[in-house]
Image (tube, rainbow, N blue to C red; front, side, top):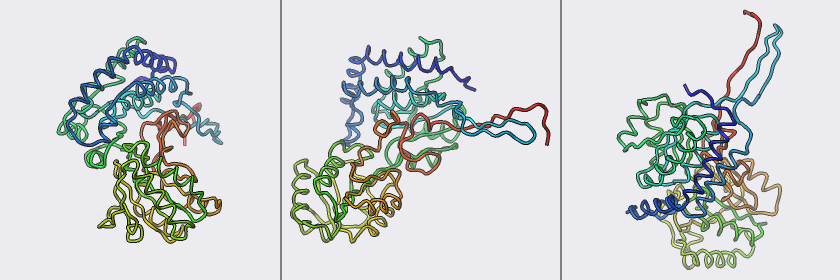
Length: 398
């Protein structure tokens, strides 16, 4: 049982972590270079997520200092009721207990996700990928230093240095109580955790996000949203993979040629259906199964669609349930799209790249959930809690 640390102690640990990250900035970056040099894979998005530079360290520091400034998410009253018999009933938020985060490649998760879990009163078990082991161990060392500096046990942040077989054994039969598991990574990792876990799992699912260009679209906005969504950060789960162009779009050919030219300037491979493959530089895809794929690469599919109803059906069938955007000046059409598209975040004339805890006002996220229980989309500090009933009386019996 983890005795809840006071909010003052939790905040002090987070602020100390910010100081230590600044102090050890060069050491972290140099250790990360060893991880980068040892990485022999050819996955460019994995390499991108693995890299720690000055701006990444800045983000880590900003994350923990911002967390320290936020209200305590534990013990917040959600409901109160005075029973006829005089009992006073309250429902309040409570920490989960122990949260296991399994992730690939991203040393910043060792700071941000651990910080969110810790601030919300949870013990954190971290299981990072072997490709980022050196970076992760250094960051955990700083967590332990921050905890000890504030008289708190280092058991609050623990790193599990397991291989795949040891991880599977731990998931199936944990050597300590685990209350919640959060896998962050590719579909294989998520499927592996879901298959073997023996406690609730928050699925931080795939992206495969869509943009729909409606006939009443502002074409400059459409261009900016598509290019930003596809090229700003290909390793992000909020990147764009699919574009649906309404067949009744005015100036469709001119827009398509301009879009193709801009995408090609970023070396994006463009695939299309029968109608869009007539354009130079677009290759027709072989199977409709490609609509299900998340690329995490400089690759995009552009297709034509008959209207908003067909678009909604298409997105609901193929997307990862993450993010979708409509580009239109028609408010009523936007409302229909946003109410009926079944994704965690829906956008009107905005890039899908904003599906991110810090961008949506949460100050960071543990993960971005594509499940519907218990929280959808970015899981922030205030979502990493469960709840508990507090009932006060003076001898009432039923």
